[in-house]
Length: 231
Image (cartoon, rainbow, N blue to C red; front, side):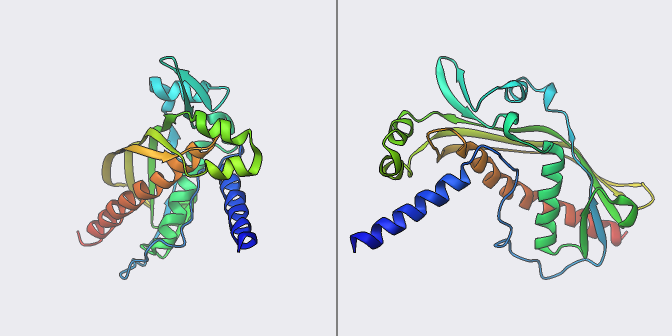
């Protein structure tokens, strides 16, 4: 019985560490997204989002950070520093939104940066894609005791705040006519989020909130396409 329990603890630890690795992607599992029963026959391209985060003071600190651990107001915090995103944030956010839409089956086909071959395309600007949470001393100490210590502290959470915001979300047809201006989409999530010793879990936390964000954006976009077809 003890051997079996140790096996599952080891497996959990392995999965936990894999999800919190240094090289980070803006992605999440789309398999559980509920499909829509009334799909449109039109195709859509999600154009690479324009990154304007440099205009924001908090995002500027995130973009310039040399590490995921940052001292703010005298306390260590975990942030999703751009340093560990190996692919431009604007391209990654467009790509995962396209995957979300494809899984949702709102449209016949959804592509990235291929507006010349689709019926509609969407553009947007990224104002914020920012996550911060308190550094966990307990998690850091636990990691010093190897596998057992890390397992013992794997369930720890700390207070954090996540801001995801797009501006100038616009829908165009294949003739480049503006069909609808969806304006801005902003969501702020506060609460306790999973934390690890090295602060890499902040990336996974913001990815999970992005899934909720994209679900709402997808619904609004689909409604605009439907409205444009009945005019």
